[in-house]
Length: 470
Image (cartoon, rainbow, N blue to C red; front, side, top):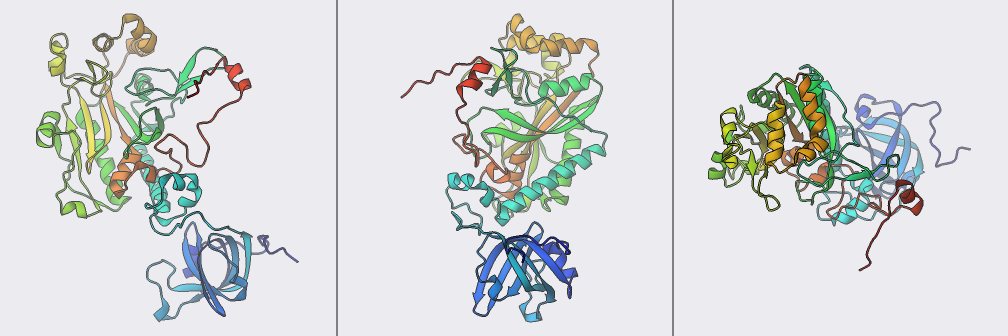
């Protein structure tokens, strides 16, 4: 006799829930989770859920001890529902399965929280501790699956336009790009450290020198920055694009076409204005008081299917920050406007740049620039930013040397997928679009990280940890 918890794979292939409407009158085998259970005495109804959807199963005593979220196997005949019992809210609402045999594959204990509804009322730390359960809810399944469709569309769109997808290193060199680096100690070269990339900035520029002309990558980036609603701690995903022999208009045009395609044909939403309105930095600061703004009026903000996308251009090349008297507004590889180059030595804060930012419903969802390709000008910018000649050679010598061997004019943009989808879906945090995000305190979902490592590992790396007890 077959054990009741064993899957009977022999002799019958699995049918997905979404296939049941086309299998009326046939005996099928379904595998999935018990989404809901309703006991009506002699009749027991369960909703069975798999990756493709949900379907109602009707049975008797054999379903009586099925608990919600248990993994089960059910065999039975697919039947049409009576017209008055059709459920128009699900794709399989016109059919149901008459259970003939049922087995529990893996019994679930009581869940720590309900996975009905959006779950936003539950403490985030609890949701992240049991993220594998939180991800079962319909909203999270939608978010992650739509995200996958977006990346699929990005790849097909760009490859059709002669872009090449290229991976760049994850362990690299610490360079000043605006945020704290995550450092990785080297075992083979004790006392030296790799850095996880804040972006593939220098690598993509080197790929332009290498002659690839059109590059993209859906890439993980790492920054030790304080988290907030529109920025996850530690790591995030961005679409990185770089092109040679282009102007800023070319970058904006390709990006705009891509985001319209994603918005309308993947997300099923509307773009407020096409082409996207373009503002100068000076204009938006006067009009909105910030370089991130929402073009929707109050009535339009009630429409969750409307995205207001816009461009901001003509940024200053430099800005003053709490930490630095003079720092780059974007990053130190951004090209200044040609007519403003004479101001670099006398009035650097008046120098405008070829930076461009993409705004969506009040959030910055992308940013980029035309790059500096003149090695003398690039070295000069580094000097203005306070780097010594020795520091420039140590941190950027590889890039300046590459520019000596024939570098094409180039530029690009990086778009934050997490943030764009957060804005598009009206989610309260980017963490709602990431399968396993870190918490606001830097704790990773499910895993107990960061964590201590044993002395043997530290010794191999030549590291001693000095933690002062409070």
